[in-house]
Amino acid sequence: MAFSISEKEDTIIALATPQGVGAIAVIRLSGKDAIQLTNAVFRGKDLEKQESHTIHFGTIRDGDTIIDEVLVSLFIAPKSFTKENVVEISTHGSSYIINRVLKLFISKGARPAKAGEFTQRAFLNGQFDLAQAEAVADLIHSDSEAAHQAALHQMRGGFSGEIKNLRDQLVHFASMIELELDFGEEDVEFASRQDLHLLVEKLLRVVEQLIGSFDLGNVIKNGVPTVIAGKPNAGKSTLLNALLNEEKAIVSDIAGTTRDLIEDEINIGGVIFRFIDTAGLRETTDTIEAIGVSRTQEKMKTASLILYLFDLSDTDLIEINRDINKLENLGVPFVKVANKIDRANDQFISDLKRNHPDTIFISAGKKENLDELSHKILELVNLDKFKTGNTVVTNIRHYDSLVKTRDSLLDVLSGIDNEITNDFMAMDIRRSLYFLGEITGEITTDDLLANIFSKFCIGK
Image (cartoon, rainbow, N blue to C red; front, side, top):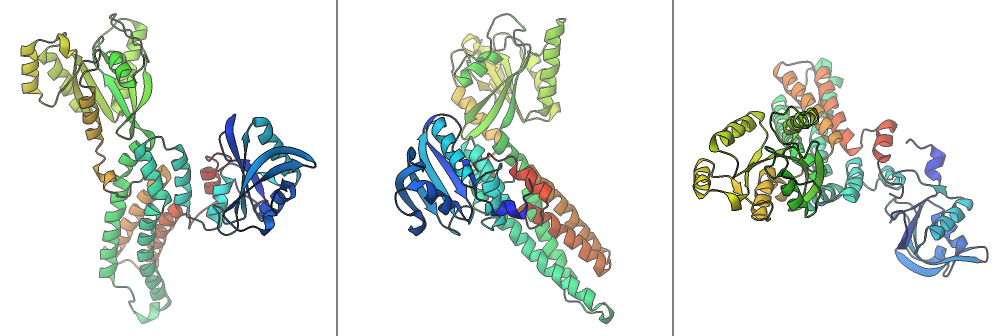
């Protein structure tokens, strides 16, 4: 979504609130003529004589025809989201009114905004960097407390500040190395190789920490894929329904009722978990059920968390130990969940607690001890790092750039150790700076910007 020079000079317009009938709608304009265009169809105060960050009541008219009574908010450049003149018109939420107002402004010279064009203008005009711009979209789409906090931290410059600090430190040494190239014949050293080595090691520790945070960041942003696995009739569908508080999955005493994967999202402690109810794990001659069992096994391999559910009234310790051994070999964190505690033998419960003290005992049917299960699930996600305020990487593009930065910094270290020439060392340092610059937008291409902002909604 590259824009020509003339397009960047246009005044753009779009609906900033969701489509559909509501009490009010907000229509946004941005561009040097935004206030002038609005003033031409507004009856009330003269908007071109008003101060920034003021709100004015009046009517929007097409000639002598009143379209609606509105509130007009003024944001005069550069004190606006886009750093251009911005007008936000609050109308009644009728789709008829919205379309009439949009068509009126377009007829007067405004252009319909493209996806993400308001935020892109804010970025291009220096309101914030690219990482902060991407956080705007993440904030809009955040559907949990953790996702909201991560996006807000990034939008307010927490992540960008760390990247800028890394880049600034490296730029100083890069300039010293480049200066040495100008005095190549005089054998001078402006940048201590020992100091550079220490700096790169320090930068690598920070970069590695950011890379390592991506697993947590991905969980925060996209949810934790959590598989409920166990034998048929262990109560997997009943547990899913109990957690959801709705009859999402079919519950039956007939073994093999669940033959495909059933997914839904649950918010636990501010984190989204994508629960997947699976076909029961057993040997079967039923072709359709066998496909479901195969899909279950594949989902278990790619899950971030597994709830191993077993029926206390229909499972022995030998079978439980065998299943746990298989789960441990998968290498995926799992919770041992003993279901139907109301039907269990006291001696068996005692033996199980002795052999597996971390087991959670529940009754999915009666919704007993589900809070304890929720706490255990949340504990395994390990949000401690996030809750301390540390920066967490949630964006795959940032993760990819950080990995490339790490590899380039390792090349710098290798170059110092092997005493390579300054021109090659300068290349490795420049490459590190390039990848860090990709994150904040100091290094961009039209294709990169088009890909990022095309994912935004039209009015943002």
